[in-house]
Image 1: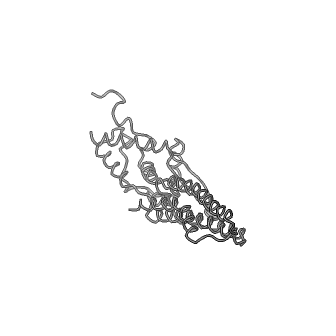
Image 2: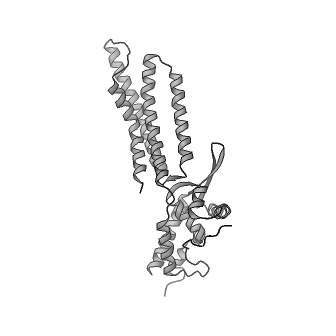
Image 3: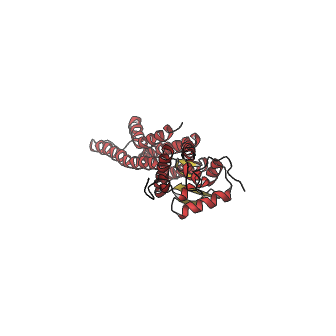
Length: 101
Length: 168
């Protein structure tokens, strides 16, 4: 019998666990930075869904949101923080353990 | 509101007991995730190489301008204009910054700035030698300028190549 809290599922990160947030983090992990529209199109969600989920990830310090302009047009840039990358790596590690078990 | 019906999902959080099949599906989704495009990588590679070439050309052109007395102000304005235009194009044309692209670019820029000083010192030493030999200031050989420009641009050309090499 495994001791309480020792199972790999306890290592899963609740902030990354939800499908849309998982997709956001998985996509952002492959680049240094992405603009909002590119990420939205890649993971096929609406502006409001992406905005809400990114705010949740930003609140836990996993995603950095940077606002700027390209010409006169406002543009939002998103990136994974170091903490977010570490959490994602740990989450994947837990998933691998579960998948193998 | 758009839902995400076809998205491979993370393990079932509601139950708190993700199955190994859930975990495998999530891992497959994660390994297939890709945000940057070849075009984005090409844009960043070209922009970084372009910055290097602009810096190399400016080092040489400003030296020629000083020697011949041509307008260095116009040259500087053109140089700054080229940098701003290049940065603007890079920002507009790419939706993502490739993984490690920023780090590679900054390392390339740092090395190019260091080699800019090496190029300038080398050109100054050659000019000093010519003066000591009693020769008037004159435009140096083309190969000297070509070497100085290449030396200055080289790190950013290499940085651009490294970013471009990440293309699929």
